Structures are given as structure tokens and as C-alpha cells.
Image: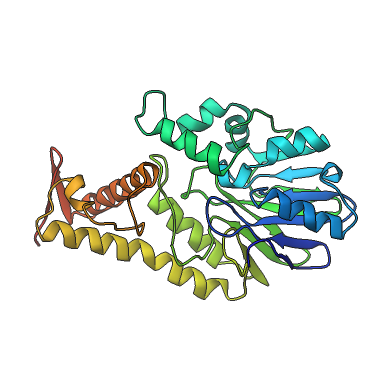
Length: 307
């Protein structure tokens, strides 16, 4: 249920945001108050803090898993209110510090025809994500850091975006998967610099480790106990989508517009921004099919290669 808080350990909680344009936020209350990915509803965060006799200005640390607007929504605002410290990895940090770099990183360079629609969507649904602020501490891969005595370790997991990372909690043996989220939607890789192959490797990395549970960045029931089985199902979406695209080409779709005449990934393509995300993901799959020598591209005309 959106808005509720789920206790993970005596010190770690998840404030449920759920589906995009919100996300689940992890709250750590120990010697300090820390929040990972402040993309839940601000009112829900405030309400839960009050149950612990805390206010937003008591927050000491914010940790960002990656630069997506739904995961950084309230970071700048909370820093203004509390003068807290913001932690991010070495790729995320310069993007958070310069939102123009962030926009370019996500594919929305100046002059991109969808950029104004994307900016409007962010400002309407994730207000504050484009506010200027700056990171205080930069985290490297596999770096251990302390949130008021609760130890975390970064685990770089690119693919979703190049800067995506998960966070492991050593003592309780949980991992915050962020956007390796085990949702029924499946993996998202809707930017030019996203990578299907990197995403698959990152999923395999998380599957190779033993955890008490994975905390999803978007599931309404955020704790995934059998993360290996869940991620196997999650990973299958790559092949299902690719098979669907290959079938469309084999049935006569030649251009990317023809391939996308009906939704492949999103249920509806009535939104300009979602249409752009879908196009970028389809392009990644087309490149994958070309590399596998299943499809060839003749100046924008796609054809299957028969064995």
C-alpha cells in the first residue's frame, strides 16, 4: 500500500512510494537519520518521521542510487531544510551537481524535440528533481560507508543507467536493489547510454550473492525474500521483448516506426515521453539482434537474416 512504512530491521525502514514517478525510499534511523533515494511522497516521509519524534530537518544524510528524477526528487529540498550531507557515486555526483549534464546524460540534449515534454513531466510529477544542489561525499564501487553506525557497501550495477548502484547492508544482509526492482514491468533501459548487456551482467551479479532479502525500489511489497527466483523472472523480459520485436520484423515490419506501431514495452504510447523511452529501448534490442546476426539494418530498413 502506497504511503505505508515497512520495517526491515530495528533501524531500517522503507517508505513506500511504489510505481514511477515515485519510488520506495529507505530510511535508516540510528545515531543519525539517513534516507536513500528520497522519491517517496514528502508527506508520507514527514508523517513517518513524526512517529519517531523526528522532523525533516533532523535528516543527516541522503544517499542516491542513481540520477533518475524519481529517485532524487526531494534531495535538494531536504538538504535546504536540514543542511544534510548528500552521498552519491562518482558518475552520479557531477550529474546531480549540474542538471544540464544530467539532462544530456539521460539523452535529452538541447534541441531534442522531447526534452520540453520530459522537463514538464519531471516538474509536474517529480517537482524538485531539477533543483540545483551538490553532492558532499563521493562513493566508489564496493566502498564501505557508515550511516550513523549502520554500515553500507556500494555495489555498482550499470545497465539501467551507467551510474546505477545498489547498496548492501552488512549486518542485516539486505540489499537495496533500487531499479533492479523485480517488478512485473521488467527491466527499464530507456536512454541512449543504457545497456542491455550491462544490465544482464548486473542482475547476474546480484543473483550470485546470498541475501536475507532484496529491497525493491518500486514494489508495493518491497521485500523480496527469494531474490534469485524473482530476478530470473525479471530477466526473462529481455528475451520476451526481443522475441516480440523479431516476430514483428519477420511479419513485415521494416522501419522502427512500423515495429513500434503497437506497444511492446509500455501498455500505452499516448505520452510523448513514454514513446521516446520505448523507442530507445527498442533501438537497444535492434542493436542486440544485429549483433546476434538475426537481423540486418539496410539504411533504416530492418530484415531478418535467415540461417
